Image (cartoon, rainbow, N blue to C red; front, side, top):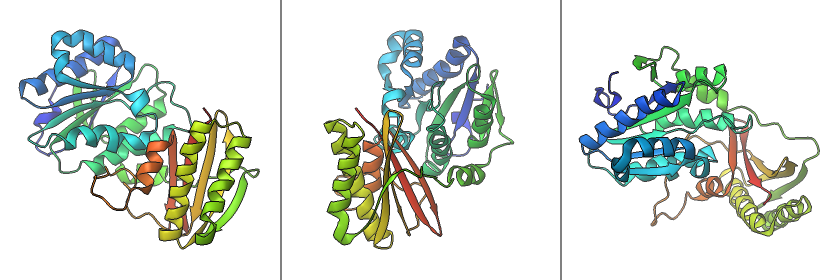
Length: 311
């Protein structure tokens, strides 16, 4: 297998298809060991059972690896680039960095999945030109065929059965356009229109509606901050007004804000926030507080939807 880190372009983003624990270890552990041998910082962000497999195989060498439980840190795919990948890579700027990131696993819901695909596509934008290799494993035994097809579409290189090939299906712009789908809200959603004078009223409206739908006090506070950030963004950047909707969906409360603005930056909300930064924290905070965030933006306006667990 050709080592992706030895390729001529600075950034490498291969997908690793595996069908057994043995194939998983064969594709990940040498990747980590080669990085350690080259004095490159290495990290693994994956579901906990995968972390344990790698730890056991590495033995004492595991002490040199930064481990992250992706099911926690990456529950909202919109948090992964700033809080997991960039957090590790930006702190280590001398030479190449290697990361294993597994954001898609069996059990991801149909509501979460489009955000996962969008995340995988945006990695190519976020790290373009950087000396970083991000290896993304996919469980080809358990994941549906369309998920594996998306792995080919979002990764320039695919490793399958130990062989590395350029992906002929790689289609970054097409995937990003598909993920920017219109978000249809249920007809029964509680709705309020707001402008700059009604920002406190819209936040109180969301808190009241969330509590009526069984949201705990702790999560209500999170939702109130999400609503405050989104409505303020609409007033400042989205034409001065907007529409707030809220409803319940399974064990989550969903709120969305729609306005006349347009998000030109595909990584909006996914840039790390600097301590000295005065603005630009709104969407980042929304991603941090939410269990899932979906966005649709176009010339006719922008909709940002936040999912927050009731408890």
